[in-house]
Amino acid sequence: MTRDMSYLKDCPIAVLGGGAVGKTCAADCKLAGREVRLYSRHKRSLEGVSLAGILLDGVQHNLFGFERSGRAHFDIITTDMEKAVRGAGIIVIGVPAHAHEYYLKTLVPLLEDGQVVHIFADNYASLLLRKYMREMGCSKNVIIGGWSSTPFGTRVQKIGSFTLPHVSVKYRAITLRGATQPMTDIDAFIESAKYLPCLDSVTRGNGPEKGDTMLDIGFSNVNPVIHVPASLLGVSSMENWTLIYGKEPETYSMYSHGLCPSIARVQYQFYMEEQAIAEAIGIDIPTYEYEMFFSRRSILTQEYMGLDDDGKDNVVFPLDKPSDEGNAGPNNIHHRYFTEDIPVGCKIYHDLGVKYGVPTPIIDSMITLGGAIHEKNFFEETRYTLDYLGIGKMDREQLLKYLYTGALAA
Image 1 (spheres, helix red, strand yellow):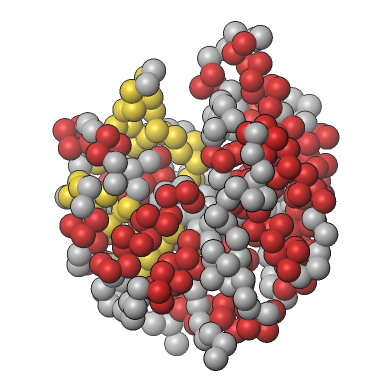
Image 2 (image 1 turned 90 degrees about the horizontal axis):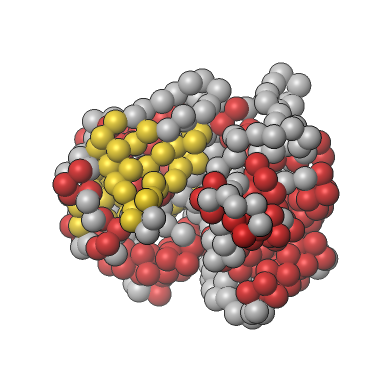
């Protein structure tokens, strides 16, 4: 029987993160009429928000036409995480992976019984949060789960070096894949999504999908398979966009200007390596067909435009035609498409492949090339290892038991 999570409808929502995802989630929830507290550890990211709130707008493409726009003024805006999460029902974490450790370790002592944590995108943060709870002696009865992606493609608007209190949404997801650590909490977590308004386009659309453990959610994150080959192999297009073609840096789109059939073939082979690793571990991940990669939005279009009755993409943006459908970015090699998706996403795939005997030559080449571009060795110069996630010493049986039940080997 599904657990009653209706108590969440009257509880404040704490949003942790002052970037594009955090601000958009917070504004979306506030415009839906909820009490919302916005936290960032950086005071500068909150500048202007107290005075002007956050303006949420944009084309917000999605199959069902769901849209929410307006100017949101929050109940609490703070750099003190305790003020944000005290008494909150749902805690949203919307920060890049490199910020997870700080946010999660700060959050652990503040957790309260009955709280539900939603992480966009998870990037193995649910595994980290449970690990930190064990290490810090926290036994609070909380539900911890994460999603394969964010509820929308969004960007903070800027003028020059100035960040404006304004977020623009390019698309809204109508389905996302979520899971919990452990999976015994999955039904309650999915039910709790009904009380998180930034997921309204999902819960009112095709609905959330139950993933098969938090590792599935790591594989379900389409960012590494889409972003990394297209950003690395299209890096000359990005760097010449301004120098040679005289375009504004912020107008470059990896989707619109970097993708081509050759890169799509690499993306598909990258995905096939992911699938082989998942099969070796014994978990299910989403299935994509070869032709689905040959679109200017690659496999991302499914998140907001869905599939037809035959399981094909409802909308395809052909690679032989121009399109401005894609999100902007990256405009330099320090963008998260490089600095997060390679040393986090690709690196964990590599480590799982090594542990479970699955060769990953395409994924490994991405890590090698990304490191060369940054003049680093991303195999070594990243904290993201299986040990870091707390699962390095587990064999396959122990790992699956931990993911499904939370039980650790004696």
